[in-house]
Length: 371
Image 1 (cartoon, rainbow, N blue to C red):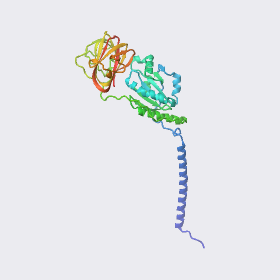
Image 2: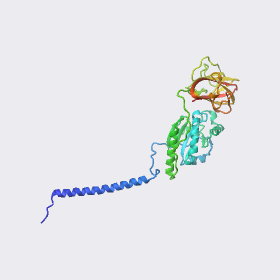
Image 3: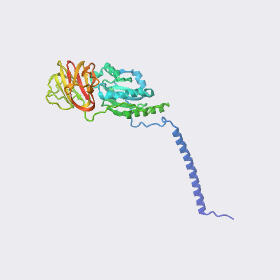
Image 4: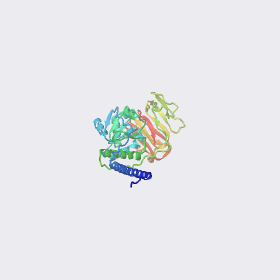
């Protein structure tokens, strides 16, 4: 007897077959996916390529007129495959100087793990182009990493920079992965250094352990209300003229200044004969005075020429507790090199009348800076 195969039965068999096939297919696919995922998890970080899309390569060092703590060929070799921190600075900039304890500490801590720090010294004033002056500053601040003299600011321009200080960090492939302007951001910066050193270690296949502990240094705390930087050169003072004397600037001339009866906050006043120069004032008479009504915790001067200065605060010899690091116990400052001198240092932001008495002609002053 022939058996009759009914349509519903046929449909059921077809559906069952499709389910079995799909089940087997998905099982194989899941197995392949798990196997792929397992293989991916076994890959090192170096094999899991980080996208560098949108990052720019660090430019070549350009127009370098001098090298300190290194030689050109040696530096070129060190840059390859290193994590490089480019620090654009100048030695008479107080903001730059305040960052140096952190930078020198990072150099000591990470130099054997693949970090290369390059100090790009881009001067603001002419005297900062003198390599002997820069060498003295490098020794003073304990800088052991390479420093290059970017006297014409060609490397500054190659980076597209407009600030002191500025830090760029490039990874071991040369891509700039971090950019910080000014002081501060030290924890953030060090974490970037650690991250990029780990990437480098993975890439070259080393088992280097990078400590995540951060350098601990007391950071300078800026006042919320402080006198801005004051310039003495007629060209530098354009757009930020804080010379309070009615005589004003007369470019390239000797001018006799007289201090008025009333003083304005954030302005400086001259007494005596001073030569007006592009980036500074030079005392032309046998003696002279500078008076300033300021607000801040710190007062620094950038000077040139050897001279003995007497420092008065509110009409009296500056007290020891307010004296800066370059003031003697007799309330005097002896300027013997062209650069930065700290003359007032207090714990809190205060308002005072500062008076500097100069008894040596040829004394030069470039700027006041505050903190």
